[in-house]
Structures are given as structure tokens and as C-alpha cells.
Length: 115
Image 1 (spheres, rainbow, N blue to C red):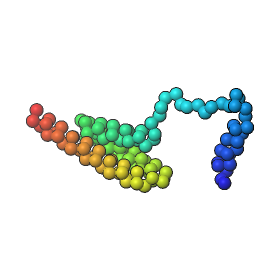
Image 2: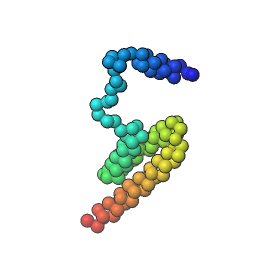
Image 3: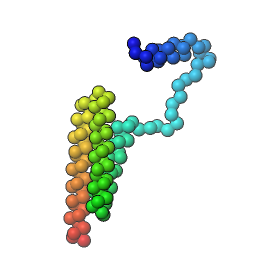
Image 4: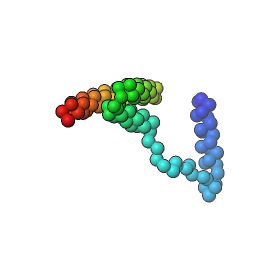
């Protein structure tokens, strides 16, 4: 058993030895926090949307680069946590997001040309 598991086990045993009236229940965080993977995905979507609506091409490229960095981070988090199937699924989802944003951006530019 590694050190972390022994420490966790010792704390559990210590808690169990306390009288029920003195046991302090684990506290839950005040506000619910979304998992890191979901936070990254939301940031990626926001960055792609901002890049698609950016007036300046340099700014759009910077936003796309930031999104790409977060995409890589998301996939690394999933792979490192032993979830390769989830990583593949997210990679497909990210491709669809990029394609969808690009298509929406092309439609917007096309409609601007008409207006």
C-alpha cells in the first residue's frame, strides 16, 4: 500500500474511532464547481466563437491559438487520467466545434458581403 493510501486509511480509522456525536461530517463546497474537463470545453467553445466574430484577423488567430492550447490540455488531462476513449470522443467533438464555428463564420462573412 503506498503512502497516500495508508494516510487515507489512517484518517478513516481515526474518524471511525471517534464517538458518533463528535464526528465531523465532510463539508461540501458552497458552490458547485464544474469538472475541469467541462470548464476547458466551455472555454474552448467561447474562444472559437470569439475568433469567428473577431473583426481583426490577428486577434482571431490569437484566439484560435489559445483555443488550440486548451484543446491540447483537455486531451492530455483525459489521456493522463486513463480515459483514452473519452479523449477520442472529445477530439471528435472539438473537430465538430471547429467545423461548425468555421461554417458559421463563412456564412456570416457571406451575409456581410450581401448587406
